[in-house]
Image (tube, rainbow, N blue to C red; front, side, top):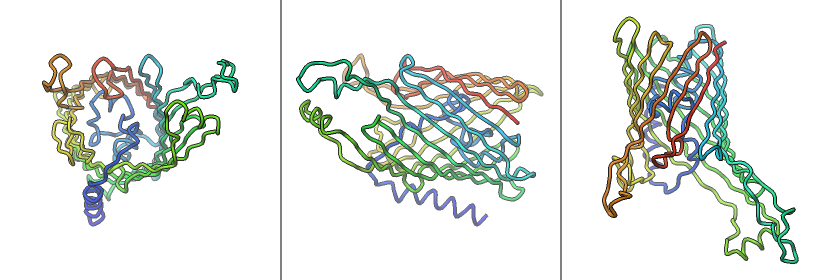
Length: 356
């Protein structure tokens, strides 16, 4: 319990100490992984029990029910212009199932973007043979480890994550960060505490332009970027969940996550210029743990009305999905707004889990 108390203190103190920092980045890591979590509005930090726990809360990895599990997903948005992909695998480290390790890979990117910097030939004419394309993509690798504390209901988990951002041949960045989580699960009740980027995650950028490309940027009124550093502030996520046994075949899970951050998002439901509390709600109805119906609500905001200038409106992002479990195969689907950028931008989200 001393280790548990120390971790709780470190998670909270890291949130307070870095709370005054003015920058944040790596938004692609806020999207989520796995259709179950997306369908439930992201409120799964206390109920996660699959290979996807490496993202949501690594302490949940100890509740993966098999020795080895593989997970994968694919999603698209803006009519396939953007792609979001994820794959993960992990295994138990001991016969008692008290420890579990996992490796997760995430990519979000846009490919085949036209590069027009060299479109004009030296004589000023347009030469389409000089037209090329490039990709802009964000990558993350999460190395996760979860462990039970004795034979009790508590477990701990930690992520070490490496981040790479690539902008064609023009720019790239490397970053490193750490997440840590705590999970309490006894009978039907679950509670969790998850700290993201608890040491603050730093990305160091390096830019590379030819002299011709620099000249084109200056002639078109653009600045030539210089090497820089951006960083992601810590976030603290608390989770609560309860599983209700409706009948011998039907179960119903209610879950709530509250994400505390210091990014000053004044449109959030509970916010100030230095503090934000963002609630998320998830619901899951299951039939014999084989068929699942899921709903979620997240991204509660106060926004300006599109119809009445100056008027504020309440906004919420609903989500939903289905899940099927066939022996060692789990297939999940979600309909959700992958970008959290407004109504009408909903995407189909598919994920697959394989047990071994």
